[in-house]
Length: 205
Image 1 (tube, rainbow, N blue to C red):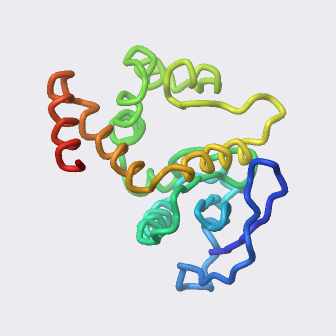
Image 2 (tube, rainbow, N blue to C red):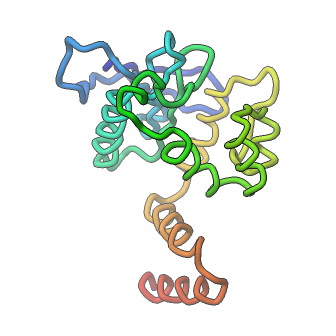
């Protein structure tokens, strides 16, 4: 895996200092499946999928390597945010279809359907699953599949780093508490959700 520590000249980004880091990958002979970049005084990690020839398709090797990397990053207390990006013209083409054929995986039922129907309205999800059509960034935003999109002429990398910087301004413990509460109550009824927050408040104060 390649590692770069970059300095960006911008009014909203703090300059990164130069550091020497040990790659978390122990096998230097294998090609790098992704690169790691550090920003905001190493509080933000940007992982870049490094398979542009296949439009960063998600092979089993890449998924396993990325999962292991995220586990190791999670153990580094200073890191507050992780950005995942893709090298080349596309973020990712999705699963490596050639690999799926070899693994005899049922594409419709086992891959896109489960996360899709949990993140966007059911009718839109069914449309996409039955037709296989792609949607535009604007459609994804309206459907709630993404939280924001970059305006024309803006660089997504810079926009993502701006969001990460905003996250890093707040207390790590408060951010963690907010995330825990959100995912705990999101599927509950309103009454049960209030009960959960009362328990959290009692535990914290």
